[in-house]
Image (cartoon, rainbow, N blue to C red; front, side):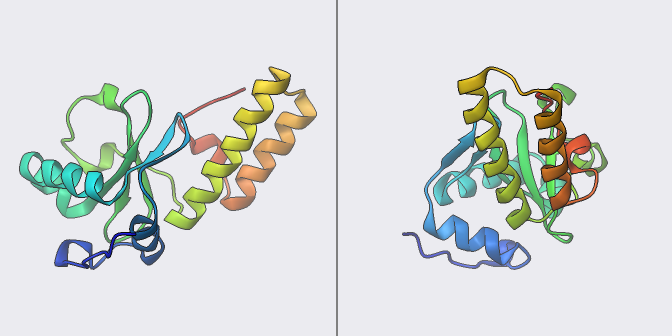
Length: 154
């Protein structure tokens, strides 16, 4: 377990995220949700600060997808942000997709998607009723969350 040294750059980050960071190594919950461990998070955020200081003032990179897209935590709102790497370099925080959920809810959705992937490994696809139930479950975390989510399974 890493003891998180809450430096000035971490003061504004979500306490649940900092707790997670101190207890877990890098974890792949789904291929689309990989959350960095402490050392990787520090390294990635140092790179962000050195190359995109304006973005690093507003956001902290927490992970990435298997395709190279990235997950961030907005430093003042403590909302999860998504950045599609196909947009190129980070020029403006407004180009990031605000998921409108905090880190705790992000973990909830991550594990819901993990269960979906396990189910799809067994049954290949869900029927329409099951798909609707899944969408309702995701949207119960935050209204419109399924529609905002950058990955569409059906």
